[in-house]
Image (cartoon, rainbow, N blue to C red; front, top):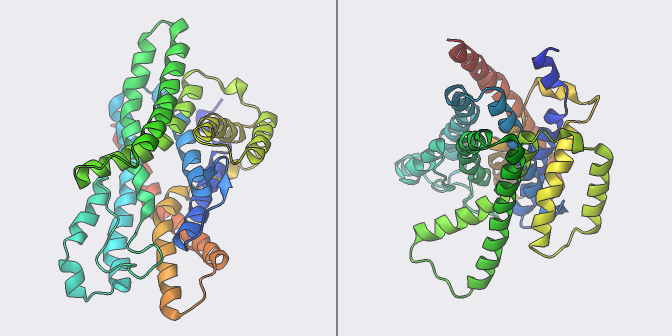
Length: 360
């Protein structure tokens, strides 16, 4: 069987679009000062991130298992993350920022926040640009979607070590190793939840950097288990347990038990979301396989938040009524356009470069 053809016979393109759309929809509620709807025990934008991490854990693990060589592996990962990210940061700083800032051009470009924001190109996440979106409802948050990229890239670095250790174990112990590691990651999330609940009113971080690390660890632990569950299913080759009928049942259960108290909702989500996502992605005879021909989800994810904040800025400046549905439709359309442009002019050429590099 042609491997390239078999890899396209799935619904991963659809799941990526669903994830990207969910992130934009959820953020639209947050950026207009409203609570986002709950989907599979998470705010809808959190569900979108969970979709990306679930399929990421599965596909990255399969990629390493096919070719367990670090250099080609890391080259693919670096060229997947950074070119489009750098383009997004540069366009935000040098195109969007000057158009919407409340400062003069001289004040804007001489402000040290510019240099700090450019560090996003290297995954040192900063959210503010001088005078940008300062009158928006979520003021000064230029691109809140970027926070999870350092977490994702860190997981890319962990996977080769994690899987190489498992490969060295006796065959009978490998599933136990992957399963126990996955459960430990979920347990860490639950323990962290209880710890933060117990110290919320008593703990004071000694510095901003310590508080930043605590917040980063907290948000990271929320999403890492999705990646590990997806990786577990791939490493143990457990595709046979994935069933579309069971996935539908789990969706119904999630709808009925949407307001489970924490941490039960976290545990339920970590097991159910990857199962549902991968069951839909790997269903036999996928009818949305044609969506794999062009992946616009990463561009949507990168530019969506900036586009939404820009739309809100324009609406406020013009005195238009802030209508979440109108803004949502406009942001999805414009984000999709940017996703197409990103794929055509950045990601597709980069894929060709990677292919040439790895053939040498």
